[in-house]
Amino acid sequence: MPQQRDALTELVKAHVGRDRQWSTREFSAVAVDPDTGWSPSKSLVAKIIGDQGYDITPQLVGALAIGLGLDREIVAAAAHLQVIGYTDAELSAGAPARLIQEIGAEGGPTAKAQAVAERWDAEK
Image (cartoon, rainbow, N blue to C red; front, side, top):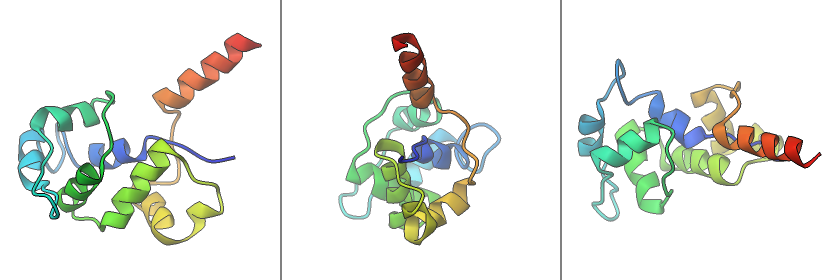
């Protein structure tokens, strides 16, 4: 069964926000996708760290990688884990394994996972 967690959100929250390395304004200024020149707005960064819904795009992944100072493939692995999930075997090597090292192996229940669990309980 694939594991899924809000890994991209966790990754950004670890570095951006109150009492973190970057404010939302500072981060949006340095997080610029190298291929397109696009950068997330301060309000989009606030949505990400506020656990609000947001669309994950290639430009966002590229910009976050630059802003966080991480390889793009690690940030892309976080996006993949958040949207699609990985099997345990997939998490054991390569960028997914490096991502798990970056954010930690223990992920608490996410809002998405909690909503699914509640829906399943209601269907019983």
